[in-house]
Image (tube, rainbow, N blue to C red; front, top):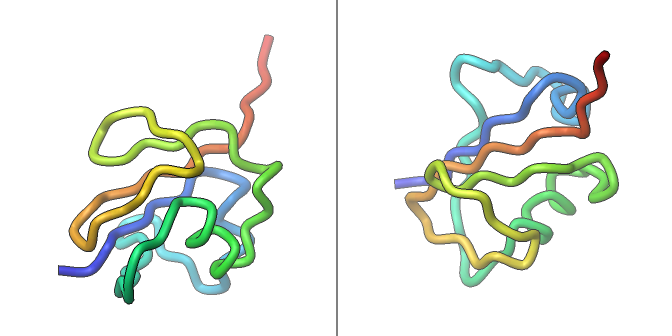
Length: 79
């Protein structure tokens, strides 16, 4: 089962044709961290504030498994 990656708001612009209802399927080929996947998808690390893997907060150096669900979120402002 491929890794499933979901992008929030402004991060979506880095993946042409991104469909928020489907996310991105990513086939793992060895050990990969969240940072590795982001680099491969051309998403700048400084644009990511929150990383969720299977519903739990993780760090950029977290090693992913092939069936993980990953959510990436940018910094959010408001007031």
